[in-house]
Structure formats: structure tokens, C-alpha cells
Length: 111
Image (cartoon, rainbow, N blue to C red):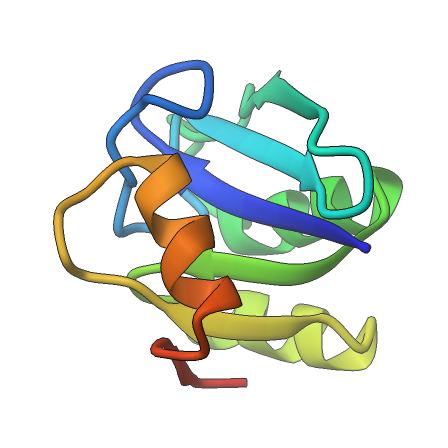
């Protein structure tokens, strides 16, 4: 299963970005292999519709779980329609920390 964490920079040591649609990067982690890949969010600075575009990136990259701080209404609807679970992480840690918290079952599911 693929997990996506919103990030301020590339890689699993990057700090988690709390905004979903405006996150500069998305880090996708394959839980089975441990492989990680970073995708630049080219729509992060857009005027509108960034949440929906970001949700499409989740679908295109096969994410089943998203870890972020908050999700706007349009992105919430798009992620829900795609069957992607969303968990909140606001501890100020790294992508690696957020994934560990998810795997430990300590994150709150918001969608």
C-alpha cells in the first residue's frame, strides 16, 4: 500500500507540510518495499483548484493513505470519492516520523 505525506522538501527526512493542496512536495512511500519517491506539486502556487489537482496526483500515484495537517473542502470531496483515507499529523516532525506515527496507530483519521 502506498502512503503519501505532504512535505516542505524532497525525501523522507523533509519536514511535514501541514497544508495539503499547497504542499510543495508529496512523498510517496511503499509500505511493502520501503521505497520512497518525491513528486513536486507544480500546482502548489496556483490561484485556485489546488486541492483537486493535488488529489488527482494522489490517484495518479496510487496513494491509499494521505498524511497531512489539513485538507480543504474540495480536496476532501475528491479524496473521499477516490476512497483515499486521510490522517492528520501536526507534530512538526519529518515524513519518516509521520509514517512511524501512522504505523503505530497514533494518528487521527479525518477522512
